[in-house]
Length: 306
Image 1: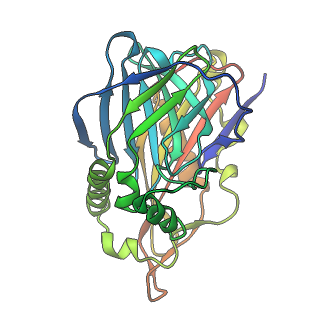
Image 2 (image 1 turned 90 degrees about the vertical axis):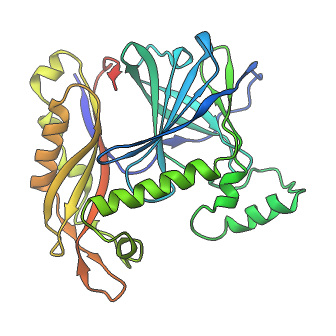
């Protein structure tokens, strides 16, 4: 029996697949308005698209300030027989379609798939046509760090291509205002953590792990009772890092069932993790935070429960 535990610090993307015959694309209209949930340690943006068996709820989640987000797609079209699958996502027009590994399971009894480390804008599409001035300006802005509201405004759809017989087009509409709301929320998060958002945004160096973070969780840490049940889990965590680099707190931002993986992750990471502290604009060590996630997986793992 093989099992592994991995710290997931970036998105999991694989090379684009060869072009295959196009699947019928089912257009899903946005039903109602975007909803924003301010959680204790995360920010969620939710939209409902379509109805009936094709209905999909898209939940964008940020656990800290920045451009990256986690995307959870909830609905019957995301049904999967395995704990992970390959799904192609296309936010267009400023990003090439990318094939990602999804973490599959259920929310209640409804199928769901989670994607980590996504951004709305990554790189220009391979096509070199940029006929509108707005699009040309947005493409030029890709050379500078950070995603601008002008770029977010150009993102109007999300096309989802799964192994199913259909593809789905979610009519997101302009993402400028929704993403602005998420940015405001994550600024409030940092403030809630007892830190100055402006100081954290101007750090010359964020907390950096000493050694390999992958060594914080080991195969023999896997709970024996979970091995027997083929149970796995995803754990999103935030660490408080002192000005001396010590871990002064561990907070679970999200987790799948059962809770045992979350409690164990915090215990082990807090005991084994070591950091160089963050540095402010003057090079002075200051308090900050570190966000990461861990995936506990064994063999042909049972579906996750989000």
